Image 1 (spheres, rainbow, N blue to C red):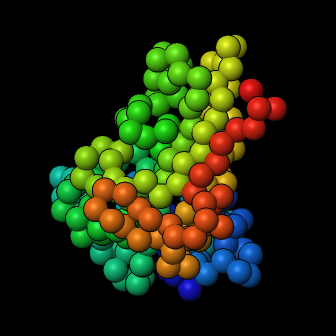
Image 2: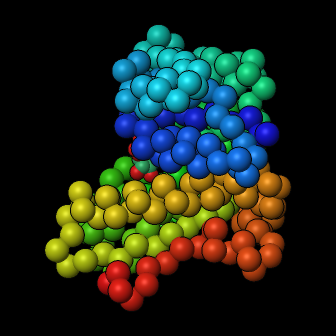
Length: 217
Ligand code: GRF
């Protein structure tokens, strides 16, 4: 079983999706701990309810990003973590930390990267007038929302969408592709080839690529 930690700052719906997926007996990974920089994050409550260890590492108690990241790194090592999943973790990690966890640190972002990096990706998509939005799971590299893409789902943008309605439609797909991506990694099917990942067999493509049917449009 691959030992996974989830880092979050808020709601934790992606954590919930991972918890749910990992409750299946054919999922070769388990969440060892959930770590938040925000003491009362809803995600921590979700983890506790599932019997998962929770840790708060409050960034306000650290005088620098480096010291905060060191505390997170220590907690991960103490628990033998093999894969770190960022799920709504609202702190920028230092490149020292990111490089230490090279190819063992993944993130979910609510856009079809490399479009619309950073905050408010769904509003950025609306402002740009795109017809397809979506979400991406990727390995983390030091640049913001950069790194080899593991899985993506496309989501239609409707004429009457606002940020809330589009975010909700994207979130539904986040909850599908994040567990799929973690499962593929845990099964050893994801190979990183410089700037991209290679997932192998055709049968696995449905795990890494989702797109709307015409009925959704
Ligand atoms: C998600 O939209 C995710 O893509 C982004 O932050 C949000 C986290 O939501 N990185 P939740 O806390 O998992 O519900």
